[in-house]
Each structure stands twice: as structure tokens, then as C-alpha cells.
Amino acid sequence: MDDHLTVLLPIAAVWLAAGIVADGLPRLDRARALRRRTGWLSTLTLTGLGLTAAVLIAGLQSAGTTPVDRAAAGLALAAAPAAVVALCTVRRVRRLRAGAGAFAAAPDTPAPHGLRAAAAHPLIGLPLQVTALALVPALVSAAGVDLLAGPAVTGPALTVGALGVTVIGVRHALRHNRLCERALPDEVASARAARPLHV
Image (cartoon, rainbow, N blue to C red; front, side, top):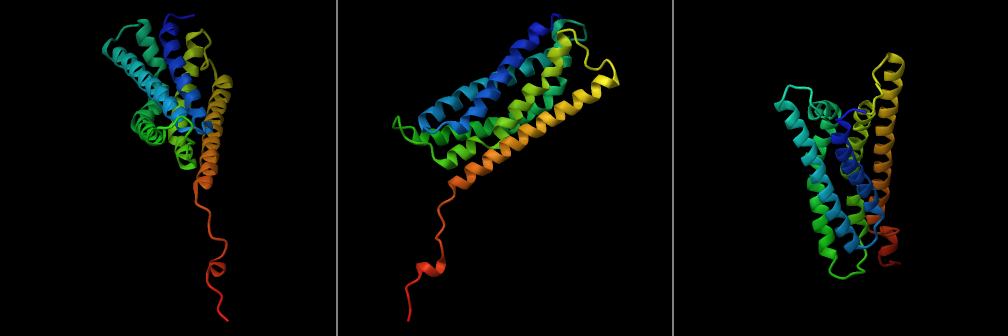
């Protein structure tokens, strides 16, 4: 086991926790609980971004083979989804928390379906979970297993990773669409039925 595993483990734990919290947001049916959970998610997201950026910057500033340098090399794959988190997810979580705060005055105020649909938006959960998934190769490599030892291992590893991202994305999109449909107002059954009867 390499020393840089001790650097990568806290970062991976924070991203994993953020992905789990984000995944549970749409299941919350009370506005106050949704506001509290979005606060947790905001804290975890900013912590994950801060730790990732700190390790990457420290790795760029030194050209040695310290544990931080090796950890920064392992974070290269997670840098792209972490950038999506910084650009899209942070803003959406902030808006979601503000929206939940507007309904959270009373303890048992139900969360509207529109708010839950916003919590299920793929740009909230997907980037966080993909970032956590992108850290798996670095953790496995730091544990002493070389995933890139040969093409017999590299191909299946890439396929499993791509399938994992696809499944996560489809799941988020389906859940978001289902909650969006619930948020739509009931349509009038027929425009003709709503008119007065003329003889």
C-alpha cells in the first residue's frame, strides 16, 4: 500500500458521502428536511472541491515523487467531473436550498413536487457520483493493484466504468422526468367539456 492512499482516502470519502446525500434528496417529502440535507450537501461538495483543488495545486507546484504528487496524478481522472460540480452543481444546490428555505417555515410543510424534481436534476447527483467513481482507479492503484498492467485488464475496466456512468445518468434522468410529470398541474380533461352547453 502506497503512502498516497492516505491522501486519496479522505477525498474519496467526501465525494462518496456527497454522492449518497445527493441521491437521497428527491426522496425527502418535507421542505425542512430538504433544506437541511442541501446544507449538508453544500458543505460536502465545497469540502470535496477544496481538497481536490488543494492536492492538484500542491502536485503541480512540486516535481517530486512525494505522496501528494502521486495523489495529484491519481486525481487527474476526477478533475473533469469535479470541474462540472464546481460549474453546475454548486449553483443548483444553492438555489435548491433557497427554494426549500422558502417552504421550511413550518416543520411539516411538504416539499412540492417541483422542488423534489429540481433535487433530482441530473446535474446535481450525476457529477458528484461520477467524481466518486473516477476516484476508484486511483484508489485501486494506490492499494497496489495496477489496472493498466495490460490490455486484458484495461479494456474491461474502461467498459465497466463507461457502463457505470451510463447507468447512473439514465437513472437520474428517469427519476427527474417522473418527478417533473408529478409537478405539472392537472390538465382539464376536455376543452369542450369546460364550455357551456349550447342548444
